[in-house]
Length: 249
Ligand SMILES: [Zn+2]
Image (tube, rainbow, N blue to C red; front, top):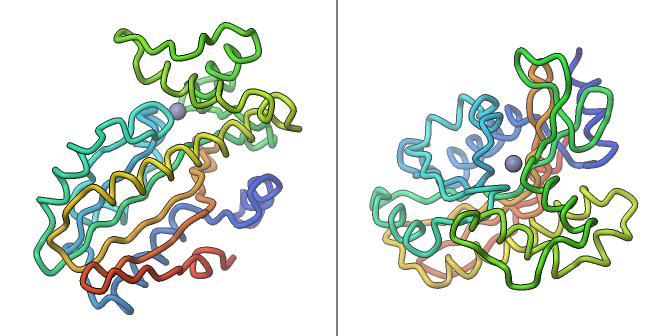
């Protein structure tokens, strides 16, 4: 399948999606040309779902950065919290930067089915993101209780509460899983901004990339749809909005 055919399937739902390979290349080009930094001066922290498909489809060039520090748990929520953010902030080279990539994920199979992918060695498609799909099913069945967060299933319960708080919006949407994923993105984005504001960094820049990570079948690969691309200059505090760089097809 050609790249343009793959993009055609994904862009039905995410019009600004790029392949993850093109995506990381654009970010590395920006870092080298505009920030005058090499990937080896930058620590990458990702807040993406712990689903093994995200390790299998991790773009090879992302490994040119230091790291990755893994902030995410189920569906990419930054469960390592303030301590996680403080940890990698203290690991970064003095003249370097931190690069935070975050967001929930969603499957789109090559037949265009949202919430499903075909994984290595399997005949049938399986759900993706599993956590978001199960939480959505629980929401539909009215089995989520307000403020119910247990020690045994802490991360899942947190995702359930995020959806519970926007129940009507999600269940009235044309594609509820798509809407649930947008809601989870908003929760992750808000939390990332809170964590950044409460953390001290001893480097030059924070590179912030948030979006929806889209997984497809094992022979199709992954894609990213950007919602935020900003660079914060830590000396001046100025935030530059660079989203147009990641919106070009
Ligand atoms: Zn997941």
